Length: 314
Image (tube, rainbow, N blue to C red):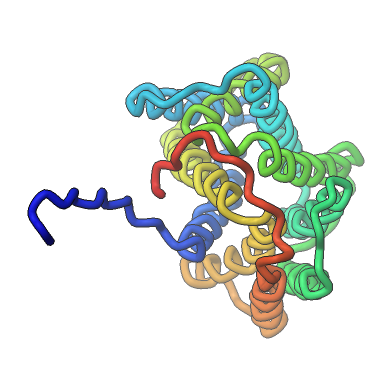
C-alpha cells in the first residue's frame, strides 16, 4: 500500500442470518419446559413480573453501558405497542393457559399457527406471500401437528377462558411481530427491549397483585426464573429483534414451525422421552416447510425497515 494511503476501516463481522436463526430456535425451545417448571412454584402473572422486571433491568443496564439512544416520540408508542402485544398479551395468555392445565402440546400446536397468522395480518399491510411460501406454511404446520400429536389432550377442568387465552396469545405474538418489523425495528435493540419489558411489566402488574405476588422462593424457582430472564428473554427476544431487522417478517415467523419439533428432539436427547415415527416425520415436514417458506425470491421481499442505530452484532 503506498505511503499516505488511508487504512480502510474494518467493519465488524456480520453474523450469518442462518446462524442467528438456529440460535433463536434453540434458545426459544427451552422456554416451554423451563416455564412449565417455574409455574409449579409461582402463579403465572407473578412469574411474568419477575421475568419482565429482571429482563427490563438487564436491557436498561446494557443500554446505559452502551450509551445507546432511547426511543423518541412516536418510537416510544411503537415499542409500547409491541410490549403490550408480543410480551404482555402473548406470554400472559400462554402462562395463564398452562397454569390452568392446558397441555403444552396443544399450546405448541396453536403457537405453530403463528407463521400463518402473521402472513394473513401482513397481507392487510400489502406484504406479498408467494405460492411457495403458502406451500411451506402448509408443510410446516402439518409437521408441527405431527410432532406434538402425542402430547395433545383436552382437560375440561382447564375451562373455556384458558383455551380462549391460547388464541389471544397467538393474536398477540402475530400482530406484535408484524408491527415490530414495520414500525419498531429502527431503535436500538437494548433500549427498545428495555421499554417493551417495562410496558409488559406495567400491564401485568395488576394481575400479579391480585395473586398477591406469591411464590415459594425455592431454588428451583430461582434457577428457572434466572434461565427465563437470561436465556429466553435477553437471548431469545434479542435474537428475534435482530432477525426482524434483517429479514422479511414471514421468513422470520417461519422459524416458529421448528420450535415444537426441536423441543421434541430435546426431550428425546435430554429426558430420553420416546421419539415416534410420527414425530420424526413431523420434524422432517416442519424443516421442509421452513425451507420452502424462506425461499422467496429477493425481488418479492418487502424492503427492510430503515435503521437508525447499528445492531450490536452487525
